[in-house]
Length: 365
Image 1 (cartoon, helix red, strand yellow):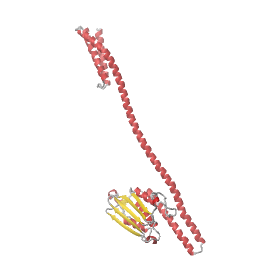
Image 2: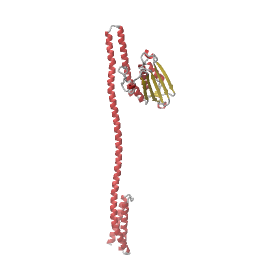
Image 3: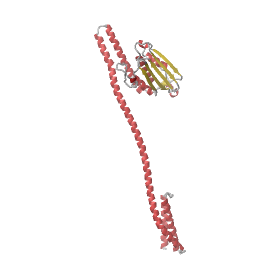
Image 4: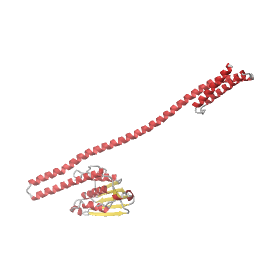
């Protein structure tokens, strides 16, 4: 009876082991070693069952089968336990490798984000450095160009006070007027520069005729009256864009075309061709002025650039034009021949009325 009781205990322990293994494996057999282990326990159960039947007085054949099965069980169960343990270790390592791979992928994503962030920071730093350099240059040039006409005017005033000759005084006053006009133009350029830098883009309905006439009238002198203004405006559809920057563009370009005409020459003209479509406006301004040497063509849009020191301009005009065109997402191209004239071509997108609120469509007056 003790043997029978022991066999039943063994069977109970084996069933308990199988249940635990099944629970740990979540009810599924995942590997060959687990097959071997379950098969070994199955053989052991049969052997113990046959041996129990023999001790209970049944056929002695049960005892023989039980012994054979038990002999087969021990090496197989040892091998199964070994391979099962090895397979578990391999699975554990595989899981570790997969987790490590996932971590590496996450690290790669983080590194990519850090790289992109560093590139953005670098671009911002470069932009800030460029802005600081331009600001330093701007402050220096502005202070110099503001003081120069003032000092000139003060000197001419002193000469006028000292002189008793009315013709000489008039000459000094004319020179003083020229100097003050230069100062006024420089202040206007600074204001245009500031507006272009800080004012928001507000697309409005554009009347090119009014823009051109207004800009030309601002320079209505005896000299400008000798210049023929030719307008070829072909407006296929209403054109919408930022009115403030278009005023700045036309004012500066017409001012330059007038300022750099050939002195004392006949047949002076400024020709303005404009063609609008639903997509864009193409503006071409041509003059027959003194032109620009080839070696300076790549520099004309740089801030404070002047072709010569004798130039009465501020060096801001074409820079402001280029920056204004860029801000309204346009393009500009300049070609010039010395003593023949200059051609400036501008392409500006048409914002269209569908993007404009009704309150933004205002008169150009």
